[in-house]
Length: 109
Length: 124
Image (cartoon, rainbow over all chains, first blue to last red; front, side, top):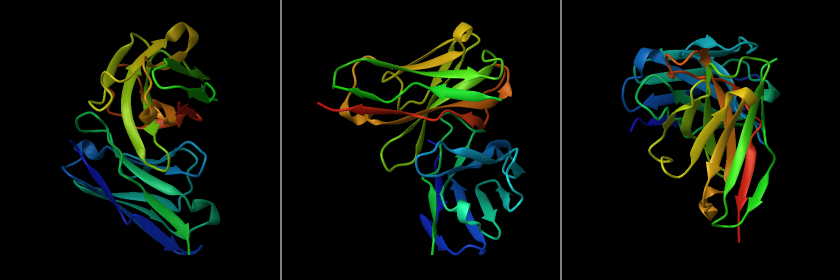
């Protein structure tokens, strides 16, 4: 089965800092079909990035995605207080099921 | 405005049956795949399966095949997730989500809209 491994598990940063979240795939992600979602406590996930680097509608440009093959990164430059949440990557290009990573919790330092 | 509105929280006993729903509005429901995603307490997201409301074609994750049943009624713009005999381990939040691309030709897709979630608690 396709496995996505996110690191770090928890990232402690201060508002204004830059966050770099990693998502490593057990095999190459077909067509860079890799998405990132943000989930806040008690809420549904929200789409941030699709196709590895395309921002979803309404997502601020401080969020950016990059990568290819088996290595992907979500970068948040100049963290805002509302950015502290859990982030998940998901592949949707290879065989079913379209698995999620285990998540990275971004917490206030 | 596209919305997915899920049915309310449920408390059930082991062995009971349950069907939860996800009603779409603001778009043509039939031609967009709908996914179900499980989130156990304090844990991550698990892709359960997808259904195409246009013809009720389904794809299940091997982990959930035979454990749940997905169905849909496009005339009511509603997708359903059903259990015939609940277990305590089914206690979780369940989300529905829409795949972004119109049509049945592909399900290699991300989720652009999510329901608010339905909390299912199974306890004796």
